[in-house]
Image (cartoon, rainbow, N blue to C red; front, side, top):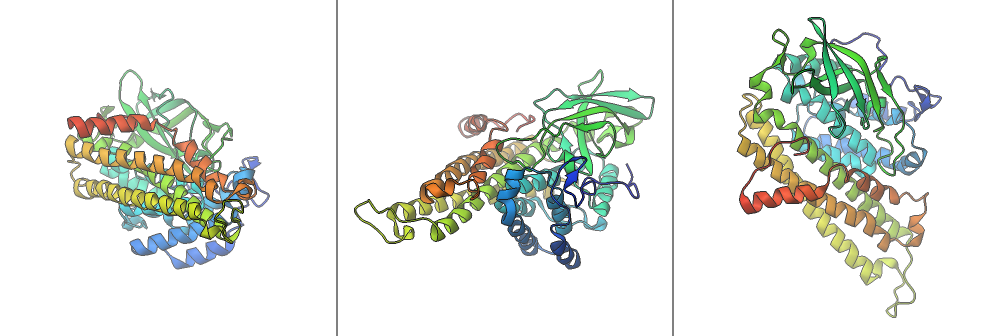
Amino acid sequence: MTAQNGAKTGVENGNQNGTHDGHPATDIHVYDVHHQKLNSAGLPKDEAEWLERARFVSEVLAKDAPIRDIENKSPVAEVALLKSSGLLKILGPTKYGGGGQTWDVAYKVIREVAKGDGSLGMLLGYHILWSTTVNVVGTDEQADRFHELILKNNYFVGGAVNPRDSDLTIKPDGDDFVVFNGQKNFNTGGVISDLTVLEGVYDGTEGHIFTIVKTDQPGIKFAHNWNNVGLRLTESGSVSIENVKIPWADAFGWDAETKKPIESILTIPYATLLLPTIQLVFSNFYLGITLGALAFSTRYTANNTRAWPFGGDNKEKATDEFYILERYGNFTAHARAAEALLDRAGEQVANVYTRHSAKRDVSARTRGEVAEWVASAKIVATDVGLRITSGVFEVTGARATGKKVGLDRFWRDVRTHTVHDPVAYKNRELGRFALLDEIPEPSWYT
């Protein structure tokens, strides 16, 4: 794939009348003042600057997140803000204009954005994973070519890779092309993406092919049916793939001459790193949402919650109530413990890529041990997230349940994605590792 001059991108399909491909969307110009500031600032230079940039974006998004959650419009303006911020480029090679950071920094940035808006934290996380997929399952030539395409055009990448659905079918079209067909019930970010990751099984084999294609083409048809209780701005609805054609040269990790997977790329443990990598993406936006709920509720309690006048040990202010102080202390302790664990897991993932990317020589054992750090993080982020995002209502009061307050969105966001894959299986998997020293068999969820 090469860049198309003048091609209409996913964000450019939005307009000031609040539509995107005929469907309701946020006004692309709403953040214009921030675009100007961010574009003039350039990319951050180190971890501290990247986190500060993410914090700024998070604060901007938090201001109107409750109303945007209610309206459930395509986040055209918000994705444009992610583009202007440079956050989409955080892991990209510097030679093509990327940030050149490592995964541990990227995870913290995802978490920071999710504090202000869980949906945009999720979209950012998925983009970072999909935009670097070629590093893991592609050739060096493919990685160079697609990084240049994505970074120089500042493209946002979505993905139609839900493994719970039937695989897309892939068949040859002459000697130089293959064609994808099928349907996916979930396709995060596709509607507002510039590029889409496709994955399917090549006809007559068990070989999977990943690729990246332009989203704006007749063969990619979105149902615009995402209207779930949480993460409402992720555009995670269904999509149909009809006769989407790519050249063999764009089939990641496959030999265009022999039409077979390159064993030195696709049949080694390194090729399975995408799964623990994205699982830790999930945990970080769970934790970001949780920390956002805690910050939101503390402000609400301090400014709005009234002391209970019938307890016998009456206080003048809610912030003097024993049970409120006790709950916030407990929530904070658990949130801090989760942060420490996720940071440690992020370092484990980053170290694997740093040490083994050049030769793709990670062992199955090392890969498995990293996966169990990720499983630990997933378990804790899920448990702490559900507990805190529901528990904050106990310390904010009945008025905090008002729709206009928006406190409920944090729990709805965490609850929606924590059923993505049952955390009970992560507990069992980690138990087998702890008790029997068994590393997990790589799968679509491990």
